[in-house]
Amino acid sequence: MMAYVSGSALLLCFVWLLFVTPIPGQFLTQGSFSPVGFFKMVSMGALWQLGYAPYVSDYSRYLPPDSGPRQAFWACYWGTTLGAVLPMILGAMIGPAVIDGNVVTAIAQLTGRNVAYIVMLLLAPGVAVAGAICLYGGSLAMITLGHTLAPHWHITPRARIAIASGIFLIALLISIEGAANFLPLYSHFNELLLYLMVPWTAVNLIDYYLIRFGDYHVPSFFAADGGIYGHYNFTALACYLVGVLVQIPFIASDLYTGPLARAIGGVDISWIVGIAVVSPVYYFAVRSFQRPAPAPSASI
Image (cartoon, rainbow, N blue to C red; front, side, top):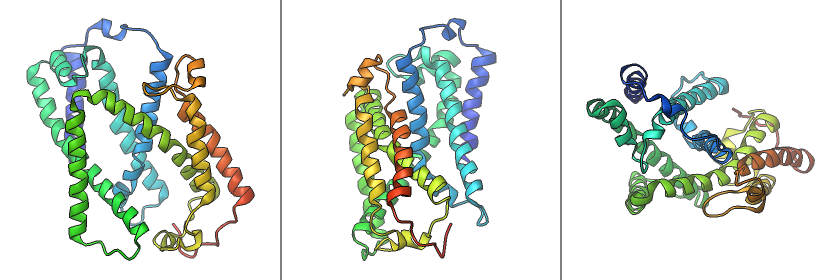
């Protein structure tokens, strides 16, 4: 439902800005190209895709039972891509009118107050839905972590409510405390998240597509001893650590700028370096040093 509601709000903005009260022509010529800004935006686009990974299972589980990996991939990929690209294009269109990060005021200035009210009313429920999904996914992650450390823990409805409520209160306190400096804090958080998720993603994708070709023993995922995979994949953990460390010299952020990033003018290519290094390292490390797991009897 929210896909249609939010989509209608986006469509209304596009129609209004392109045909009813077109954006000023100089909007398209303001400023100049910046390699630093360009790579920062590319990195944010990449992070959007990587950050969606925890939600894939939440959405794909509602596909028909006979759906395979290919259908699940395209359903999730097009959903997140179209859902991100269209708002990003709109953001680029109204960007020159945004002052101090106030997007709502910019929309009102460009479309008129009445249209802005309609757009905000249509988009507001989507924010609530997204927040609920984040709370749901975060609760599942914490329950999974707790169950991994304490396999015999019986997760009751009361425990689920307590975990979800705790996450909600922590998030609420952080949001209240950081409201005055939201954009800088959000930018720093995204940068940190990107540095941590890139090597994890590289290991994940190489393992799925080039090592095991999507053939996994699902019951082992839920076994306390890791089943046929054991407690830990030390090769993956070592490669992940390498991926984090190799990015450090290429990081360019307000909190820290590495020497190699400084040498290339402050352009942050750390995540590209992380993927380029971890992917082959993990592939050849598994092929060379890791004994293959037994053939799964129940796979996906």
